[in-house]
Image (cartoon, rainbow, N blue to C red; front, side):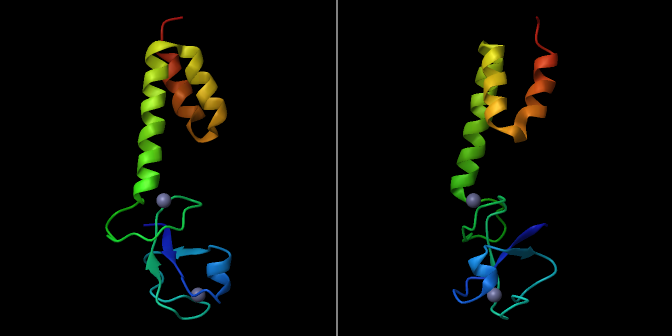
Length: 105
Ligand SMILES: [Zn+2]
Ligand SMILES: [Zn+2]
């Protein structure tokens, strides 16, 4: 399930570097042996998840939803706006380009 377990021992270098560990590989921190806590799957997010079955924290889920809404709206109304948004967020450039292909010129 990817890297989504984190050490919350303030003295541990894994905590200081915000290092995450693979879910299936670790129960305890390989550096300080503190029990690992499930955190948000987002790359730079270190938010603890109250429910370990969730993948992302509320904040990241909201951001993803907002980004999707923005993209859908932009593609539907002004195709050029979608290009602007894509330029600002490199991760969705490809997805946006694929959508633009289907738009009438
Ligand atoms: Zn640690
Ligand atoms: Zn998050």
